[in-house]
Length: 226
Length: 320
Image 1 (cartoon, rainbow over the protein chains, first blue to last red):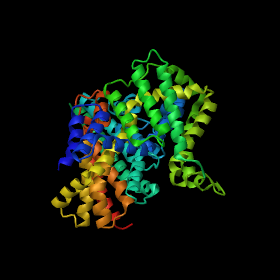
Image 2: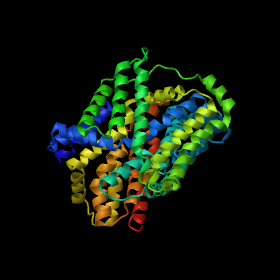
Image 3: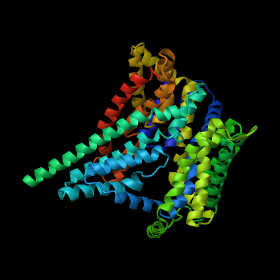
């Protein structure tokens, strides 16, 4: 049981908002110490695994120069223009469309979007605009709900598209885990078996998007009757 | 002999990181000049010398990086990129030509894993076939960079400057996945997975395949809620419950188990304030009065996906 202390360290450290790297390393050190390792042995293990897992950081560092260069020359602005052209009628449909674009693009290894980069400046305003165009003024409570769902669309699209692309952290981490256990597992098989859950995730987002639209319409009707 | 191995790309990454560190060291306006320069330089050393440095030395280098990060000595530069108006003008000038280099990366990655790993002249192979996916991705990034330089007409320092700026925006979080992987490794060395598995197997009738699947999927979600990170949960729960019960005891397919298991962990990510960058920061960014509004919006979605995952895994993992 005492060996689970590392989990406690992580939970407490995160809750108290300590630096995440520090929390993770502290959890590793504490766990190693209660398992009877010396400090030096623990550092050796950290070094060994850190080196073995360099491939996790590889794609990001190799990609930022070209992405940064393209962004400097207006890639995001161009993408915005393209997204704006695909106007949908309701808040829910805008969010569902964004979720689909996010899921498909990230499954091809193209990480576009993000909370700061797309949701706040683009997706949430478009969804709110669609609701206003359809129903006139909407309440502050509804605006909050639309925005929260915009963030949800980003997370769902991001998480449940990512695992279909083989060169990202998740698939590589699983591959690394199985390699260490001497079990042969194909990255393609793991990517393929992520597909059914990705479809379920999209359907669930669609259900919530429709529920959001219905709630907005109901509220607008109540407002009109008043 | 293999012309392209992962080690080649580690050296390229190390060189890029060293350039970034050098730029920071020469920038007197940088708010955390020396701490940041040292952090990126240490990471460059780990990438360049990973093959020859003793693991203990790397461990202490990582410790130094963690200390620098927790003392808030690693920061972003104040270097400005182009303005929004300049970028909009460039976007109008270049239009869709901007998109092609970005699409070249996934295109090369797919081509690489299908074709490039089979190219060889006698004993000289173009790339290490076992690492074809990653190597092709690296190759794609380099090809895309060449294409982007040509399209935009920018000088060769621009990608280093912009890439460095993006890396500094990510900051120390860049090495978090590697460090979490190390934590997972230490957990498994210390036998944490065994303890968790022991608790689960003692508490639940895992001789039934369906119970093993449910325990694994729910375990991934719950552990992710505690840790805030599905990657950290993966090694512990898969080592403790997934492998011994689903794969070894019941003969399940490890690829299916891992793929659906990880996505069950992501259901936990949708539900936890521990995953602050996904759930709490956006709530603040979108100026919501309820900081848990994003989690509340995601809760029904997570419940649906998790239920579907358990069903999917039960019906597929023992059949394929």
